[in-house]
Length: 111
Image 1: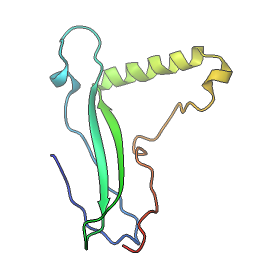
Image 2: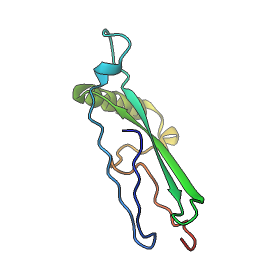
Image 3: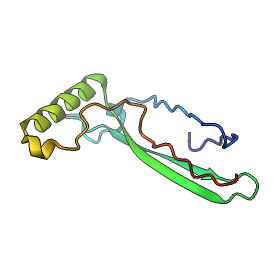
Image 4: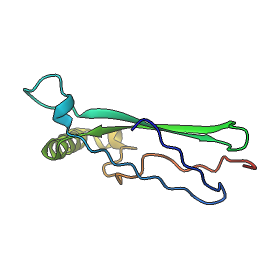
């Protein structure tokens, strides 16, 4: 899938759920060793329907891992953070909801 178009009334909140169906090993250059995961970029662009004026863009990167690879990566990331001094851990989010990758914004003036 390359693009999706959603038309909605900007006075209501819009929610869009995206699910990636792929296996990270399909994209790895080498079949041996650790797997880095597959990066995907999701971009959301908002336009005014009447005149197609660009309003706002937001993007994020999503990495797809095999289930055990993701668990191992989360565990090693947590271990690295735990080894840091408390002063260096300020501002690090240890747990995030998987769905919170785009920040909602109220930017649509007189849509």
